[in-house]
Length: 148
Image 1 (cartoon, rainbow, N blue to C red):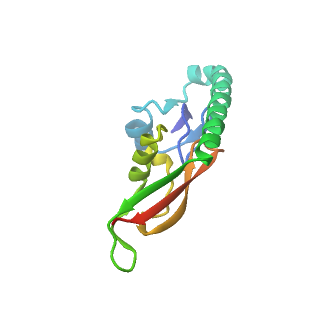
Image 2 (image 1 turned 30 degrees about the horizontal axis):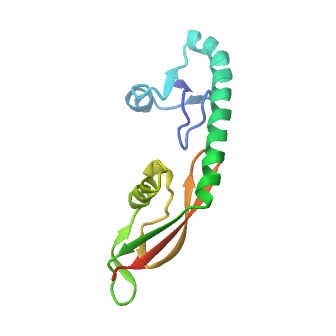
C-alpha cells in the first residue's frame, strides 16, 4: 500500500515522502496516529502544497533544535546512586532518569530522544547524546557518583 508520510517515521522515511508499506502497518499504526495519509489521487495533488508547508516547518524545527543544542552543550548533570564496593550501581541510570534531571534544570526533553546504547550501571562520567532533530544531536555531560 502506498502512503504519504505526514511526520518523520524512523526507519521508514521523512515528511512528504511517498512510501510503500504493508497494509496492516498503514491501517493499524500509521493512519490512526495521523502519521500518514493514503496515497489517493486527491492526496497526491495536495502533496505539492504539503511539501511546501513541510519545508517551512522543517526549517523552523531545525533552527529551534540548533538553539536548544547550544544551550544543552553547557549543561552538566550529577546523580547519586547507591553502589557496591566495585562502583557497580544497585540498579541503573536510564534515559527516563536523565530526562527527569534535565526537566529539573528547565529543559523539557522526551526520554525517547535520549539515546543511550544501554543503561548506565557503573559510577563515572559520561557524554549522553540527545537527538533533538534528524540532523541535530546535542551532548550532555553526566556524572554518576556513589551515594554516601
